[in-house]
Image (tube, rainbow, N blue to C red; front, top):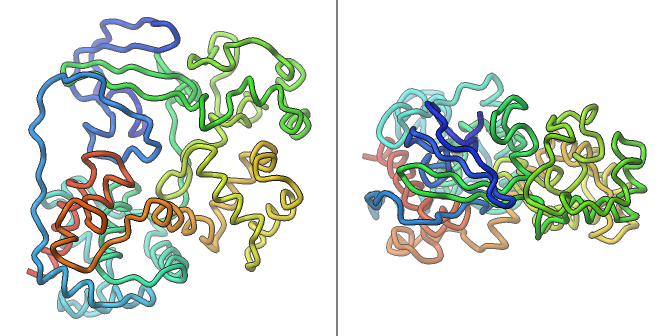
Length: 392
């Protein structure tokens, strides 16, 4: 079960029904794993509160002391070693680094109760990611701490590619890839939330793909190609996956051409889970104009450089995107993070009043722009905990 699965600790399912094309689930357990409840980011912007439900107290995060903001904003970070050197000096622990410092000083304490960095390659990933990212933008320590607060909460601080995790194929209500295809309504005593289907704009629907000559040419060799290409069955433009007729497996061997449709191909990837066709279009523009040294990106560029961006997105495959996101250079991985911030313009100010405010340049605006409304307050609390542990 991933962070977007229906229920944590499910007890008894009371009602399970199809309402039009929307799956409705009501159950006894009040703990619903939607981002607004689990304090995780809704990177795709797929979730929405539909009723008032139980009134939950609004969380207001502590403000970061002005002197902390001033100090951290004044420390330039040209490479990852600058982070480690600063922490070693302030924490008075020789050869300390961000990961070991976090695990020994911050992990398990307020706002970070359940977080610990434990991956085998976490240190190497930290170095590789920040070396690549810092080539894209000049940053200071406050910038790095704020980004790490996101990465620690969402990917446990392990800075390597992740694809959006879906439900088990044995999940009772929305198994496997149907989780991405379905529009869902989730009810509990805490309230009612809806999750959008990924089989809708700004993605192309499966019906669109199955009738697109660029798509059918690219994937005619795959399972279900002959059966589905040219179909007029409107179930493929709906928000309810035909799981009684077709596999829900994320394996290409099982589900074939279905997995190359937008709802699955343009699911969340990377550290901030880039989702939707429109966001992948920005990445494709980068790829076809690429002049760097990464063989993985060069290979994808050469396949699609002669096509329009729209056609290249249609013809691109899951294997293509997995290869460039997983590439050891981290070039696309870091570009996706940088590009999102550039497009939404949520870079931090160095003015303490602005940083602690709610407008552009603040940590709250940063968090809300990245993870959805309400995420910014939690982000500021986590940044406060990081800075306070080091500078108090």
